[in-house]
Length: 289
Image (cartoon, rainbow, N blue to C red; front, side):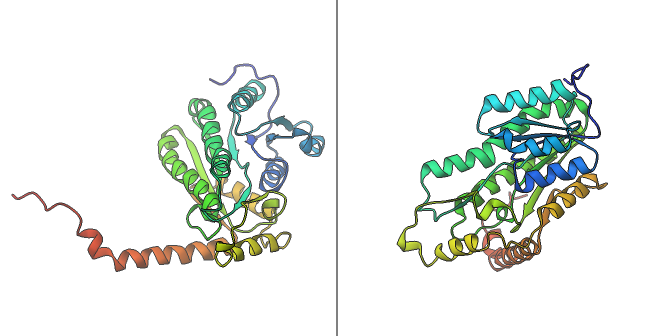
């Protein structure tokens, strides 16, 4: 399903990246371009990408994409194939932060967040996969979070969307491996992006949750501009993982994320061990004979 006569010449790999106006998306685009590759950079407001295209007019193109718009998704994937004949790396990065207790989070807020973090990436994957399968190569990078494996008070909605994305992606990896397609789930901690600033959405606070969610609100907004993670180094790590002989399924980024996930996994293992006898006692008796 690749086109026989692309209308543009691609250098290196062809990347299709969502949410490229800032943060991880911009850093990944810049790293790919620095590696000599070609980038289709997308954003809801493509004019925010003018500087990126101006710096690399021969290898970068900007286009509008709202990942919640199925028409946009179909058009962007079709354009990528028309222009370059292939997509080598799809990066599902678009998204934003959300803080709120479960009771504070409205149905609209939860559905909107799931549209951006789960349904949009799933639709992009489905749109790109026919081409990746026929190429017999390619990679899908799913920008998750260490919150895709664990959660804190106030991050219920955000973590729920990332857990959903990771569940889909883990199965997807096994499904597409026979076609030569890789899946990489990226789980960053706190990086110096707009996550804690302009991109952060907050549900209306209820006083009942001041003691549990209140500290999360204070921490996440107070860390803005002081996060320890460097998006440029994260982008380099992502490229290194894709270039590795064996690309990991999950790539955890940042000391805070590594420490949090190790602690979480230790806690899960301890709890399973404590309740193992009860857990194993729920099977039907083995058939006699």
